[in-house]
Amino acid sequence: MKKLIILIALGALLLAACTNETSSVSTSYELVETAGTTQPPAETTQPTNVPNVAPAFALTVGDFMIYMDQNIQDVLNAMGEPLGVFEAPSCAFDGIDRIFSFPGLQIHTYPLDNGDFIHTVSIRDDSIMTQNGIYLGNSLDSVLAAYGNDYQQEFGMFTFTKGVTTLQFLVEYDMVVAITYGLIMN
Image 1 (tube, helix red, strand yellow):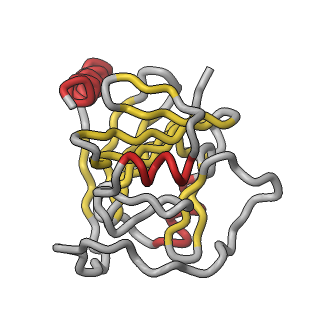
Image 2 (cartoon, rainbow, N blue to C red):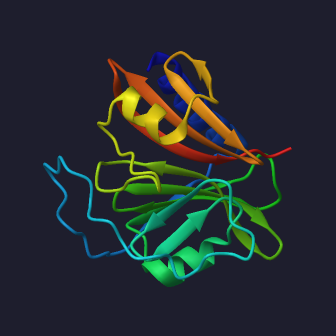
């Protein structure tokens, strides 16, 4: 957990170091009450936007699939306005990095000439689960039963890699406390 906090702090410093201007835009969004949820949401129907080549790791929210390197506009068209957007000039790309907040999710994007594309998705509460049924609060045994033993482990972070994507589970005291999808960018 300490390493995760340090990584988050370093990321914030990196964003702040690129600029002395940031903005935050908040918009309204219809929230579904999830406080006190202890069970995962009911299974949903098959996603409507499955790409021609199935992504290695993806997240299905309702009937919509979110995957790495997807244009954020597709997500906004399907899910509506986010709860908020944080923007900062990109240190690695020409343009603005953005973090979109939705109920239970944060989506980080990187800019290209033709739009903003997803590089990280973080599950923030137990109302969202992975495609294999893992949600915050599950045990490590549940993760291993769902994803197998082909992982890298460091400081409680279990990282599964497929192609250019990762799926990470931070486990403390045998309980999943963070779930993050990521794009491996070279």
